[in-house]
Length: 574
Image 1 (cartoon, rainbow, N blue to C red):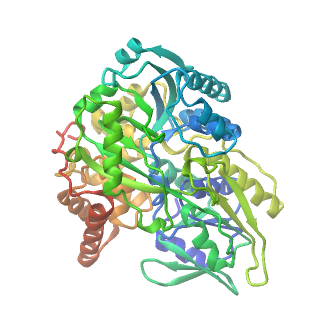
Image 2: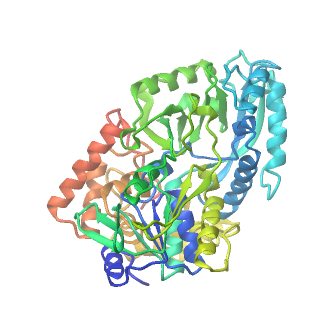
Image 3: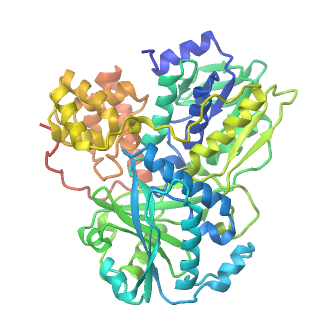
């Protein structure tokens, strides 16, 4: 197995710096086109100024859906594409994507009809809550658009009593509700990572580098600057794919492309620890309209509850965070729809915010900005001897199809034929996923000697890659982490060595769900840092620097000053 460590990758690229394609941006779209090109024999390099999935790809609402509300702006192709890709993800990533029953509360029969007609013709209008007739028509169309490769039940309408029985905490002001099924993703950062790891495992000509920023072109090609050392690496690609999301314009500017393409909006979310709220939801997602017409969601999430989202125009994606006013807004709209449940700031365990990389349009209403993705070509110039293909907009759910579209254009420009597709290709730990999970876990427990409850916990995190994790754990030494007893030293060391870890925050915020679940207290951060220092050879000074930077990030961006959950019992590690 080749060495995919950062230093080994840099050394190989210094020896041969002329890939066919350089993909800038290791978010979900960049990872998708990278995997597609790698599997089709293209010599492709993926580079990101930060970590894999560090931007918007780790800040989504954790929904896998077609985009029900885009029906009102007549983006039918987008909804069809999203629903089809949702169905595929349920099969290709069953370890991380699952069905989600969804309840839509309704307050009257005909509300919102005129506003919906206005939105259909892209005319901003004061939005009222959508009534039962409008929602029923929309869900019938949603079912029809998502009929290909269907894996879930169709929608149904519920009368008032049935709706209150299905979700007892709902406001009694409703007159009815609708029930339909979409999907949710427990750990989108891992899907992003596994796309990259799959490409590196299957294609020896593919390379991936994190913490390597594109500085601009020179006579030899593109200059990449190491964010850790300041050193430069020059590559001479034939084509550049800009998949930098909200940072597309910033990447394009040094390349001599000054056309504005991105006009993003911020979406903020809260992770809430509240037994009453979780019980009131009855295992379903509540997809509801706030009084101002904004669509919000709240659903049970890994033993807690996820609440979102806002939609605010932003100019600088580097400085976004969930502001106090957004917390006030989200808690207020939650009280409107679940009035009997008292949720306050003391229940917030984590907050996060990301920028949707939407196309730039001169519109005063964020909800009117089209969500359809597109590939924008900037042809080669005298000062830039390669074309740049910018991947603008797109929903998280449609990453595979957008990556395929971009890869097809690259293959066309390279004069190569596509030799494989990805529509039915499992992702990471979804490969070889068993119908009988219990039997699989028993088999791996027998093979490795790792207790079966621990294998079950590993499978929930890594899918069938749990076998590799279990083998590393069995090789030892291993012990539960004192502050994170559901994780162990050998497991964290395996992540460090096998999953392109460079910084402590990579593990705390993205390779694991430690921060998102409210468990990233100072003791936990320092303990994980100690394991990483041993696995990656960090000096004492480097370890201290990583600890300080990660704790500051948690405080400043994610509200980690709130009380953390009590340590959970040791249930999965012996």
